[in-house]
Image 1 (cartoon, rainbow, N blue to C red):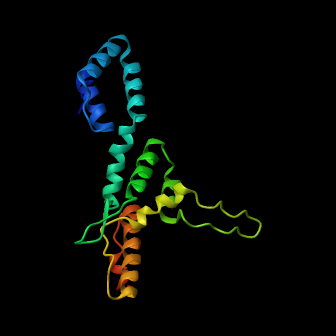
Image 2: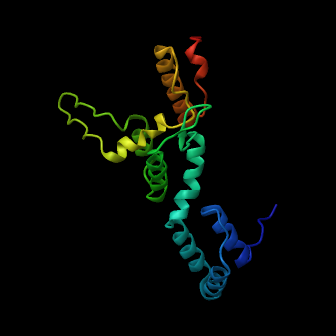
Image 3: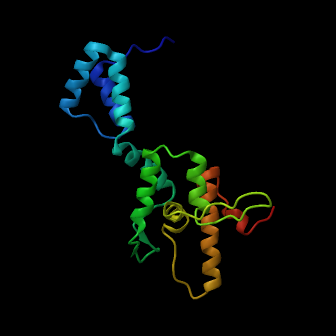
Length: 185
């Protein structure tokens, strides 16, 4: 099967905008792109892609997928929605991570263990103290639709740990770990 012919300038620009930032281009942006394509199509495409990748909307679009995976919400609790006043800090952290092309290992480390200072092994320097960004990133383990009140405090504590372990499994391993709470086989 032969490849499809190159898309027309207007169609290509619409695809780029929708894929990278999730909103269509304006008529002015279409006209500017078509003029740039008349001069040098490859340069116009490269410039447009760079512009879109560097726009704040890029991080907003792609952070949305991560925030959906983590069950991000501006409220806490099940049933009674309690406002999570500082939740926006985690949302902004994720958007910034996408916009600044944060390396994936650092993105993962901050969310799982950003608040931990690791002592150095013999002959090794200890890790630096956690930064504000490191601590904000741990919102991954704290924000979501979790029950916050229970008469059985120990059960509630174990439920929170269980949800955190399961969230890590779903987000980073692509599998649920809920069964491991009761089953060891």
